[in-house]
Image 1 (cartoon, rainbow, N blue to C red):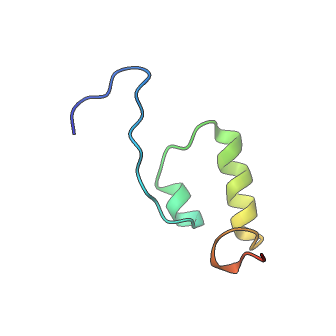
Image 2: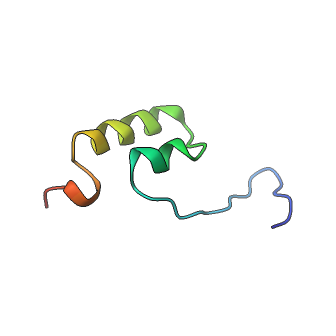
Image 3: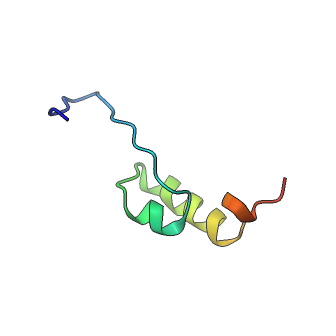
Length: 50
């Protein structure tokens, strides 16, 4: 992949797990905290209630 310039985004599929979130630079940091908490509580991913 070439170099990205400011304002460009490269989408990458990652597993919806705490380990998956830890493997990426998710910004803003607050959303990473919220997603991690939801995953740990079972509110997202395979354990999520529908």
